[in-house]
Image (cartoon, rainbow, N blue to C red; front, side):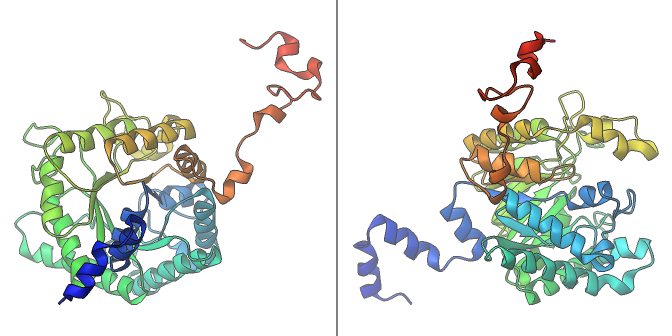
Length: 375
C-alpha cells in the first residue's frame, strides 16, 4: 500500500518530476508511449531479405537467421541508424507451422533465440537506445469454433512468447491477424508471460457476408480494438495488406466510432487506393504477384506525409511493413523533426551538378544551362 507520506510528496512535485515519478514504474512500452510523441517501428525484413537474395517468395521463412546471421545484424543496424525506436526481432514467419511446411521444425528454437539475440546485439552496438520487441504473427491455421486448432495456435504462440521473455525483450508485437479471436489468443499468451503487447490486425477489404473492412469474425476495426484493449492490449493497430492511404482511414473510423486508446499504423509500402484497398487486387495475382508489387512502391515523401497525418490523428506507433526500408524510416523520423545517425547522409541537392545552386557549379552542365528545367 502507498503511504500517505508518499502521496503528499507526490502532490508537491514539479510537473517535470511528476512525469518522471509517474513513468518510473511503468513497463517499457507504456513508459516509451508516455515519454514520446510517436514511436517509430521499422519492419519489412522479410521482403527486404527477399530483395537482397536471402529469402524465398512463397514460404517467406527467414532461414537466413541461422544461415547468415550477419545479414540480419546489418539490417538491424540500418534501421537503427535510420531512426527506429524499436528493434524488432526477425521472428515473423519463424513459427512452428511455417517451419513445418519446409521440413525444418527442428530449427525452431534456435531460429527464434538467434533472432532475439541478434536484435539485442544490434541495439547494444548503438548504446541500447531502442526498445527490443519479440514478434508473434498469424499462424495461418486458425479456424473459428475449432478447439483443437485453437490449442495448436496457442501452443505456437506460447513457445515463442516464452523464448521472448527468457531472452528479455521489452514488449511483444503480435501482428497480421485476420481473426480477432486469434489475436486474442496471442494477447493472452503475451499477458501470461508478463509482457506488454502491441497487437495489429490485417483487414481484408470484403467479408464473406458482403460487409467491408471487418475482421474475419465480423468485427469492425473499432470493435476489434476495443476487445483487445479490454483484454489488456497496450496498443491496438493495423498492419500489412494495405498501404498508407487505405490504412489510416480505418483507424480514423475507429476513433470516430468511439475507440479511445493508443493505436498503431504499420502499412505495407504500396500505393493502395479506394478501388484497390489491399495489395491483393493491385496485380493480376498468381506466381508473379509479389514481383509485380514493386511498381506500386511508395516513396519516402509519401511515408513522411503519412507519419504527419497519423500524428495529427493521435496514432502513437507508426512504421513500415512489407516493402519498406531504411530510407522510409529516416524520412518518417525527420518528418517528426528528429535527427538520426543516417541524417548525416540526407540529401543535399544544392550540390548536385544538374539541379544544384552552388555558385561553384558549372552553369553549362546544369539543366538550367541547357534550358531543360521543364523537360
